[in-house]
Structures are given as structure tokens and as C-alpha cells.
Amino acid sequence: MRWLPGIGMAMALLALNAPAQEPVSIGTVVYANDFEGEDALAGWSGQPVLGPGRNGGKAICFEQPADKGPGTPFCRYTIPVEPLRGCVLNLSGWVRFEDVSKPPNSWNGVKYMAPSEGPGGNQYPQAKIGQGTHDWQRVVYAVRLPADTTKWQLHLGLESVTGKVWFDDLQVVVRKLPLGEAQPVTTGPAYRGHDLPRLRGAMVSPNITPESLATFGDEWHANLIRWQLTFWQPKGAEFDLDAYDRWLERSLAQLDAALPECRKHGMYAVVDLHSTPHGGPDSGQSLFNSKACQDRFVQNWRKMAERYRDSDVVWGYDLANEPIESAVDVELMDWQALAEAAGKAIREVDTRHAIIVEPADGGNPYGMTNFRPIDVPNVVYSAHMYLPHAFTHQGVRGEWSKEYTYPGEIGGQQWDKARLEAALKPVIDFQKTFNVHIYIGEFSAIRWAPDNSAYRYLRDCIDIFEEHGWDWSYHAFREWPGWSV
Image 1 (cartoon, helix red, strand yellow):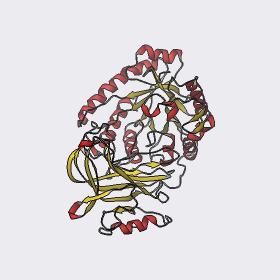
Image 2 (cartoon, helix red, strand yellow; image 1 turned 60 degrees about the vertical axis):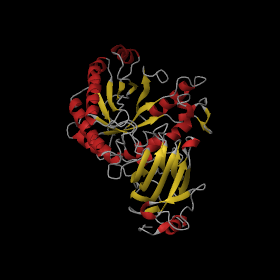
Image 3 (cartoon, one colour; image 1 turned 45 degrees about the horizontal axis):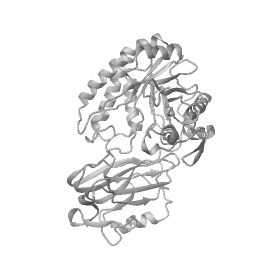
Image 4 (spheres, rainbow, N blue to C red; image 1 turned 90 degrees about the vertical axis):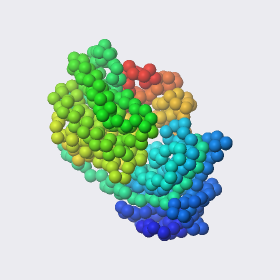
């Protein structure tokens, strides 16, 4: 169905309630609501109300009075997922709000969210809208719907704040179709970027000492470190990419000092851009909603490749740690395109070192199902293994407070070595389909997991990695005590 201005809610409902058999195309409007007509609120959960909309019409609205304290008035609408799995969709709408209080966390406040559920994990993409008072403004963001999605919803309202908000003229439009049938892109031996039987090591803090590097290489016999370029933390509404560049230069100077130590003790280094260009939490400027950030990301990787192109210690360039493209500005590159742009910039000056690319679902194994090799030579693909998080992160944050033992029932499922391999199947399939080399850049289990569970979990993970010929680096060596091996 293609939506036309003024078509109203009734036609949108007809399209959504009909059997979802016809394939969608770019530009297909899968949901539209101007909140006019008798059926304006049909399908929305709870008892939402209508208020004054744009241009004299109506809008859906939510209010949490200040005298009642922060609350969460909101409603949900379920959209059929059958024709949409694997698509990228543009979500848009007009929003007005009054006296919205400061949210306790960056993800609270005015909510225009499109969460999805599936075996690979739940996703919570949402628009960044703001607080205080603002007249009608158009909000647009993009969502990649995982290929295994079983449920998808729109959430509107307020979360953990006071104030009032109105939403009008919502629309969900197909921006990109699923990636399509996977086709192998190379033949012969997969590019690895080294001639060792295996790279085995750990992530390290940029503050690691020469003595610790010596211990790791000489006594522990590691042959790899993943060096984090991290701790870029602008505050509030700060957005200064020149300041980011100054921070990056200081971070690279620390790496420069460590590389001779790595050479001395027989270790390669991965350059891990842990902190990509972005502004403070209130700036609204990040890698997927700011062209300036994307341009600087590509420029900086070209400069880093020029810096290390002659290094015999650097193994590869890990473009971005755990990229999450849950809300992509519609005019900007998604991660697939941005990684390719950065890779091509690197190859203009450096054809020697491996380029390492993680999938956009935070580096998780299931992200490989929505990813394809980039059109750049000599690339290694990477995933991070922390599944199930309820076990590996137990005691780290409130939502992971329950104790679990491995192997055993964790979060309602039985987890053992076979289940770990099943969780890594998207990575195994990606390796086999595209004939590429795999690097597990991070994996870990919290050290206080009961009954020596962390040891058993890590043993099984490493066995799987080794069976499939993957390089790996543990998280982490002499960093935060909860993870430190």
C-alpha cells in the first residue's frame, strides 16, 4: 500500500489487517496515521486520548501531571512483521511537548520507540526527542528490522518523567529491502592477515604498563593484544570534533609507545576504535545521526592507516567497537555503507593491514544474519561473544542480578556447549558462505560466577573458536577486576 495525504486511518487499518502476502518494495508505506476519523485510535493498547493536532486536526496525546511525580503513560501498536523482516524502515512523525521534566536516564523521557523481539535478541531503537517545551517538530529515524523478528511494535508516550506530549502524522516507510540471497565473494584460502597458526590474546586498557605487556607476552605466551582507543566522554550538549581529534591523538600516542613493547614480546596489536566521533549525551550528535561525525570517522581512519601502514606490529584496524545503528538519520549511511566508506579510505593509503568489521547489532553473533561482506579487499569479520548475558554479566547491573551456573538453565533456557555453538551459528554460516576469516574480538564471563562456572564457559567458548579456526582476544587482561583474567 502507498499512503497519500488525507487517506486517514481507515485505509491504513485495512492494509495492516489484510493478509501480509504481497512483497514490499522501497517506498511502501506499512503504517500511517493522521489520527483523524472514528477509528483513529483503533489497535492502540490501553485508553489513549486525542488532543489538538497540527493544522487544526487531532493528535494522540499523553500527560503525567507534575503533582503526581514521574510516571510512564504510553501505549503500543503491533505491526505485522511477515513482509518486513530484514528491511530498513524510516519512521517519522510530528511531536510537540510541554514541561517535560529531565529524565533519569538518556533512554527515558519522550518515547517514540519501535522495539522488536526475536530469537537473536530484543532491540529497542527510538528517536531522540528532548525535554522541556517545544513546538511541533518533525522526527525521523531509521530502524533495521532483524531477519528473525517475531514481534514489532510502535511505542508512544512518556517514560519516567512528568509533562505532556502530542504525536501526529506518524508514518513507517520501507527504506531498504532485505539483503537478499547470500553469494560467496571470494575463492581460495580466506584472507587472514598473518601466517601464524592462530592469534590468541586479550584486550588491554590504554593504561597498561610495560611490565604487564611483558608478562602477557613472555609468561602467558599471548601473541595478540586488542588496544582500546577509549575514554572519549564529552558531557551534556558538548559537540566538538576538533576536541575529539585532540583526544584521539593523545590516545594514539599511548599506542605508539606500546608498539615497541609488543614487538619485543612477540605480540601483534589490533587498533580498536572503541570511541567513535560523537557529542555529549544531550548533543544529539552521534555516528548515525550526524554527517559531520560520519565524515570525521572516515577521515580519521584514513589518517590512522597512514600512521600505521608501515608497522610490522599492527595486525589490523577494528573500525568501530560494537556499532549500534538503532536510529539512523535517513540522509546518512547505515553501518554497512559507512564501514565500506572507511575501508575504501584505508585502502587508498594502506593495502597491507587487515580491516576488521563487526556487525551493527553491537557486535553480537546474530548481527551476522543482517550483514554482508563490504566491497573492500582483505577484510576480517569479527563478533563478540557474551551470550547469554544473564550469565556472563550477572551482578554487573541491576537487570542481571540473579545468579546462574553454567552449564545449566539460564534465563529459562538450557545452556551448554551445544547451545553456545547454536548461538554462534550466524558467525559459522557467515564464514562458510563468504569464505572469510573470523576474529572473536571480545568474549568473557564475570569472574564471580558461582561454582567455577566462568572457567567452564570460557573453556567451551575457546574450544568452539579453535574448532572453526578463529582468532580471538579475551576481555580483558589487567583491566577492570570483574573481567580481568
